[in-house]
Image 1 (cartoon, helix red, strand yellow):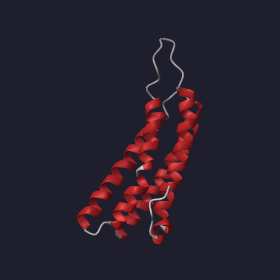
Image 2 (cartoon, helix red, strand yellow; image 1 turned 180 degrees about the vertical axis):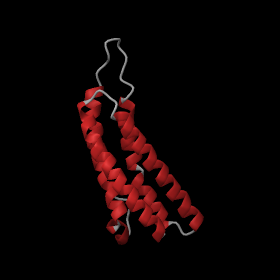
Image 3 (cartoon, helix red, strand yellow; image 1 turned 30 degrees about the horizontal axis):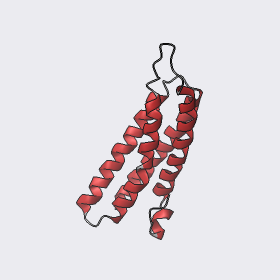
Image 4 (cartoon, one colour; image 1 turned 90 degrees about the horizontal axis):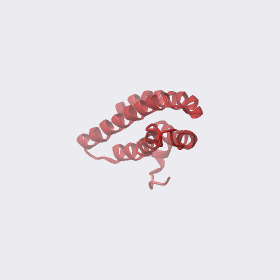
Length: 131
């Protein structure tokens, strides 16, 4: 992913962690969606399959929010991006918790993603103080 980054952004630990979370969530989503793509006996689909797309979508938006917060000139705009980033992180964490209740072998990998999210939240708190 190339967002035409200034050189200092790619060095930020929070940005690198966001990219790690994106790669992990894509791998987990692919693995779990293969398990959940089969129809139930009654012909219905497993509702948890939608959360696999949610974790990818939410993790995809982490890095652009970091970039937007760094580039914002006014503190009000920075705070809007920081709030959005916090909401995305919380939604991603909740989606992981929901997927852990699914009937998939891939759910065993979700604690790895949640651990990365905890690290991301710590980095996020420190990074927010620098803006």
